[in-house]
Length: 163
Image: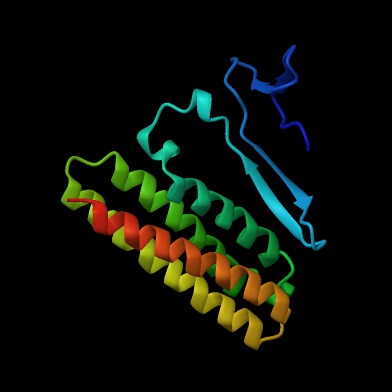
């Protein structure tokens, strides 16, 4: 994993920013079947915001990094079109979860969770477009589609539990 600019290693080997805050590490690893998977290692001990502890937020962050990675394989002419759209939509999932979590009421939180669900649906539509245009292999499409489907189910179940 690369060390970010402005960070240093501590005695225990963890990355810290210049002001001593822990760094979130983003890297990749090979799965058992040889696929490359993006890892987002979150230091839960130092998380202070409520949304950082939510599994749906953590999964949305991971999904965002995975989608970001594959979008760089799209053709250059898609840079300001499909590549940008899928990245923004996927980032919007975690951003809406975090924004809603610090809101003033449960009804407001549910509203933002609804926005996250809509953004996830937009990512799935973009995945279909990328697959139809032959920017993604069938295997890559299925992998990200399944992750999105599972994340959607988690977010919907979470939303249904908010009173």
